[in-house]
Image (cartoon, rainbow, N blue to C red; front, side, top):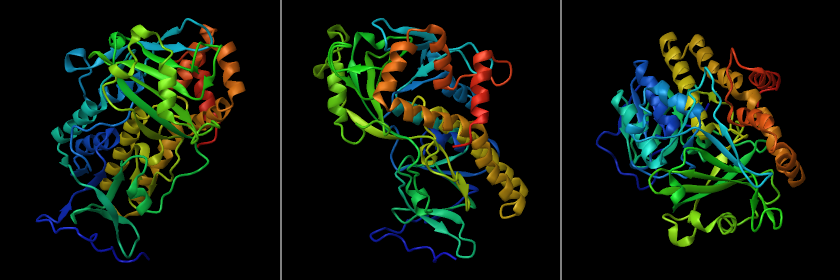
Length: 436
């Protein structure tokens, strides 16, 4: 038995519409939350979508989307044409292991489109939230959730309480409130220390490289001339935004000895100080401050369902350990969660059959990504050792066939049924690995 729901926080002001009741409450209106809200409304359910900020708002992100994320946008019914404001990219340019980079086109697959996209997160998240509202969700901005409301008899979540005292009640709640996920903590769901974690920092520069139809990844970061200076920890990226600027950043994993002991902003500057002058990555061309964010990877918070609460996106640690991509997986999880919630409503919330449908969300996530994320966890442990990373870049990067395989593995881009030998190998390894 849980204690009775706590009173409103000290200083909270009563709101004229103090209690809102819907079929589902979604906390967080980023890609995970807004996607979940859209699918839930398509199932005919009423949704309260809660966002602590006001749109448009900025998020620390690379702004680059792989074909996996692009597929999710298409499934949502989002127009991904250039006329609708998207910049398309056709592959990945990789620096490392040799002077000239490799250009690897996105694989030609049945399951995924052959292009990725670029769009600033401030605009991207706003677009997805408006898409959810257009489908019938009710968006509540400036709504900071501070507590879970529990049923005394069942210890299940039956709603959430906002900082201003408002309550939003529903028999099922989706936590899409990011890495820190106050709602998960309120439900005593904590991060796992045996899962990888990353930190990313990024900024924007005015640059002639802004109009690039390839995403760019740097697997070796030097603070001077390549092979003649210090190899810095982490990986870097340069994504042209098509608007006169580039999104430039780097990430570092907690498997590196430098994690937590590094000035990441200084690390970014040291790397960029040695890029070609004509690229324009200098202080005077920087258009925003350098900002950072955590990357929760490999299902670092589980279970993804319990006591009426479903976790999606960063709240459930769903960032891909192989490449740091989070948006695609947040949107996939959101669709799976919405399917489970809709099925539970049809079966009758509170029945044993409905609970089986909800637990099916956890099983579906494990089946879809559990083995693959386990492989990713092993991968990041290996590359956290500098000597192994050097061997990979020196002997692996110069081999184009191996790099094509690596691209498919790291970006999780394979055909599930009629793929080639590489696809079948990657899919088999993912199936054989125990779920993360």
